[in-house]
Length: 350
Image 1 (cartoon, rainbow, N blue to C red):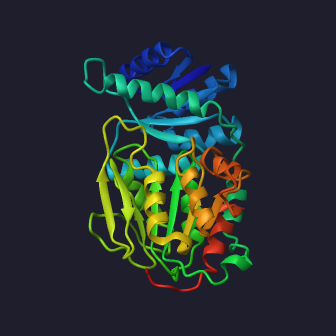
Image 2: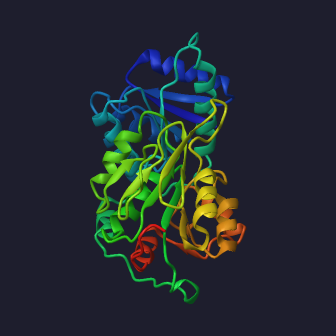
């Protein structure tokens, strides 16, 4: 696998090269800014690009836009910045077509070095399998302005009394979730609880990014907080999120060794226990199978279960697994999921 490193720091480029090559991959080039990256991509055609955000001449946001328009290639944003403004920019790079964002690894000698290095190598290998498509900015704007098409509840769910909407997402999920929330009505009849796998340090900016387009207020869930109708609650970093029958949020500390924390499975399990058929659950783009088995159980209980259409996902792991298990009653694009959710009857949390 051939990797192009784009970063304006020679020290960081050297560190990333060492980690990538130790991970069994080949670094075919380095670029100190986006303009250099574009020239290198045209010649070398890498399988994956690691992209910094702040660089001279051309930054990571503009470079990612140009790459996805001219040389569609999987991009992983590797950044050291955790400031709100910079992390919001990282979200914008995802919207421009990058697959995921991850923090820069600590250097050798740091207690987290091995873990960070392994995570980066794993991420690069995983996104190398993603089939990216060319981006057309004008077409994207035109599509985004269309009202969500009507879907309509099926006969089995016409009388549903929704107590909670639970959403799970991972790689590729931020953009899908943004599109979904953009299409949802402010009259959504129950609370919306979300587990989005995202690198630690980016959740606050992710929340702010979603609030820019969502008619529903988006916040990070707090322990003991009662989730209210028409609001969206994101699971915090490092905590599993649960909800009880009265829509009271509980947070459970995760173990350092856990691969997924928060996990979609944890949220869906609590939803199945406390809401059963009066739940609505959604799986958006993401690697792996987190939440799929629990969605199957919710489907068995009669809940309204929805998976993102594979034609619209970045990674069809989680929603695809749900479809394989027969767990998804509907398979829809984010806009059509929004349209379906807008058909739900008003019902306060039970």
